[in-house]
Every structure is written in structure tokens, then in C-alpha cells.
Length: 192
Image (cartoon, rainbow, N blue to C red; front, side, top):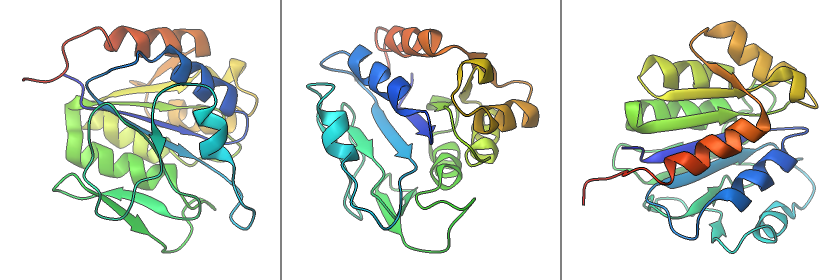
């Protein structure tokens, strides 16, 4: 009964994110939350680029927007994407975390707190350790934690930091990550 799939990535992660989006079916019964590092002071085309890879709706959530199944949410540029206890998004403009805003750790830690064992999180390529603490927390709360196999990552520091932090985090190739997420789409996810 997965309710959310959270995916974090930075430098080198975009090809894997796009492959995951292409593999998602036209309808699914959980929410997908993407946290991808982007430059803070340059206009981002990320939403348009990702929308070009799939027919799925990809949107940057508004502050206080309820999280709905079947939607792919992209953390807005230059805001931390938090999740409140009532399962609404909260946009935060506080200090950078791990040199990043949005920070993967900030979102992953919210996912761990709110969704616990009903969360799957994936940490992809990146050149800093953002996301490692959050992925660790998701696993400790009973969720599934996957890090991209560092050998397959363009920048291995991010997934390797997660694997070094928690031995229960699974190391998977991009192909296995895509296949796994495709598999969970065929499982019953929520009680109707």
C-alpha cells in the first residue's frame, strides 16, 4: 500500500528521472514527488522538459495544496517543499540545506514523518550528500529506500552517502529502479 514515491536527484539525475516518468502508467494510485536541484538564480525549464517526456500531469504545487494520488509534483525552484500533517504541501524559503533549496533532505524527512511505511524513496546521482539523511529516516520509519548504484551515477557522492549511512538502503541500477517503480504500479496501493 504505497501512497507516495519520492525521488531526489541532482547533477546527472535527469536521464533516470525521465526514464522513470516514461515508465509510469497513464493512471496510478499514489503521488510522485520530485525534488531536483536547480540553479537558484536562473530561470528553470525543468517542468517543461519533464512534461515533454510523458503525458502525465507534472506540476509545481502551490502552498497549502493537498497531495493527490495520480499526480507528479515537482518541487518549485528555490523553495523547500515540505509536507504538513494534513497532507498538504508547504513551501518554505528558509536557509539552504546542504547548499540546496529545494533540499531533498527536507522533503524526504517530511515524507518519512507523514507516510512512514507507505513511502518509497529513490536517491539518484548528485555531487553532494543532500538526501542521505532523509533517505535514512524513510528506511528507519519502515519505508523503502533505494539509492542509485554509485557505479552507474554520473556523480556518485549523493547515492554513496546514503549507502554509507544506512546498510538497509538498497543499491540499484537505473534499469532496476525504473522496473521496480513500474512493478509497484501494478500492486494494489490504497484501500478504496
